[in-house]
Length: 127
Image (cartoon, rainbow, N blue to C red):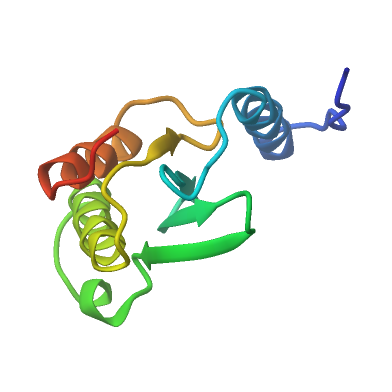
């Protein structure tokens, strides 16, 4: 089954390509109550991570660079992504989640995405 994403120019083309890749990833990755999905959304300035149970349609835990505990801290974007990963892992463990499936959101597993995932692993989440 083909999913159509409108092709545009410039930066919109890049977002359309990310959307196509995310659709391709989501064909195989789904969250369950035992092992919810850790989805990462990346913009030029911010990172958002959510732990989602796709069967119920509930967000179990979330963290972002917009959170008050992270917002005023110093460091580059990768350092902030590490803080988001540690915070979402801490909140997920508080919600009773031990293991997740990782949804990179159509982005490459490098840079800020990898930093967030590594920090979540170090904080105790199993992928």
